[in-house]
Image (cartoon, rainbow, N blue to C red; front, side, top):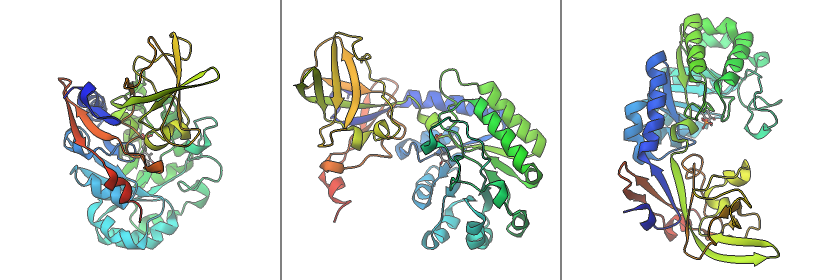
Length: 377
Ligand SMILES: *Cc1c(COP(=O)(O)O)cnc(C)c1O
């Protein structure tokens, strides 16, 4: 069916746009010999894993469930978890080739089990190099952060005991290659004595490689430098970059109301339930054919149908007045959207559709009342 015929709300992921991103990432792999993994936290549309698996080296998981899903792709299966549970670790060792620990306490607790299973063990370090200004919520290097081992608490004595083969850091968020270069400098400053003993180095995610204007040559220079200086296999595990700009959320206008000078359009999509990052980050998602407030003749505040006063996507302007039944398309809705949906207020979850190269859309999944009920008791 055509995109106009889809039920709303509906996430639509565009296969050609995903493949465009995958080609860029594959180019980095081919030119440098680094391996790129899909960080499933950002995008877990497993329907596309066969396609993604043809380009990337595998998946990165945040715990057991994502690791199980990542196995469906069939490539390398890496896992980093801030803290593993006793009850899940055995299964993790059976399905993950690379297991990364967030502390030496976790290494001492689970290291022998991981070793016995033949996993390659890594430690997440904290290079204490903040590169994102005041966005503390997205800065694993903020003072006192629980993410990664700082030099002060590093335990060189345990590296050999557990055969640690890799170091991992993840400190970037939607950033270019210059902050990466700066972070690698900090890493070398703090941890260079241990780098030559490593087989691999994982530079985490947050690299906006597929964004227009990203400095790919600098990224490749950093990778080449690490390979040459320490003879390591370099891994990157971007999430956003895999599906950046490749998805939409299609929604319908349910009502138009007025309060004082503000025209409100009530949508069948909710910021709180279907695009929570709009409220959490916060940010204003792009809207196809939507202008800045006041830029076009008709300005509306777009909000969800929930009872949360702040369930507002933002103010946008249009050439024509909005009518009940009009369809709107928010852009960049593949990443950190369908992985974060919830059914607060009894909201239906958006369907998930795929648009192929000819513009034909196929509904991959629909959710009904049962999806809401099954999470409650
Ligand atoms: C979030 C995360 C990623 C992916 O980050 P993006 O910003 O989506 O590229 C990769 N690795 C780790 C450990 C993460 O926490």
